Length: 68
Image (cartoon, rainbow, N blue to C red; front, side, top):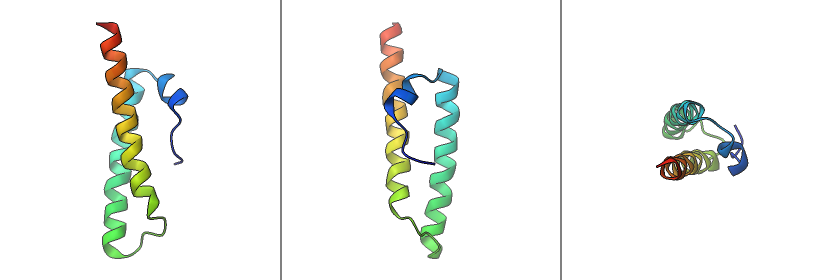
């Protein structure tokens, strides 16, 4: 999965954002295991996944604040 664009995230519904976060957390978990066992080839993907999660959470918080 490539780095997520902000415009793509803003187009998501809150449920889609939650699903994306769950999927990214699972991917991050698997990447950590691959790194620990020496099987991880693309080490930068860990950083991208972590930042994608933060990006989605930030936009979700902004949208929640906007609706209040």
